[in-house]
Length: 113
Length: 112
Image (cartoon, rainbow over all chains, first blue to last red; front, side):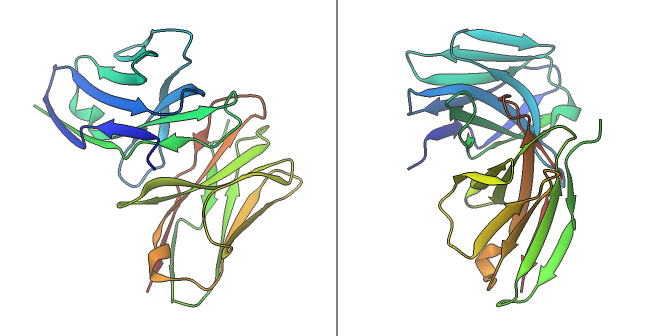
């Protein structure tokens, strides 16, 4: 049973455009939703995270939008750059982060000039 | 502050052998988690250790085991290796009361 579903699997965006990656979760007890960025040959790096008590969080060009009623959250990358080309993973956990992260399957983003 | 370090970075083993991977967490972090990453299954949780005690365990066979030392460094062991154990093994650390997990670069294990 996949508890966090991520889409799309791959995404190609023009430089300067907006990249949008979506995730849906099933367990309403999840209370922490991070996004990770992974470059080839590297481990995942924490990008931005949100708790369910807010609907949006922005850090630089990266924004998480959270819809508790729909059980969905998304990552928006504004002004996408070739350096943003990487694989992005959404994840969720519960009990104030004291349970393991459950990851989506990942989205491979390619930003082309 | 130094990040999470994992050794070795690459490993090639033969079916039936065993392997031990090592992880040193960020200084001050007492929780260490291990994940397996494969193209087909993605990132899957193996186990978490906190203050030398296993706190959570994923759905992996008993061939996968781990431990944590008093300095928070952790090791994971896989016995009787199978071809399907080929994967990137990732270690993540966090402070005990913090949500945020920070990953190391991983150990790429290839089983032939």
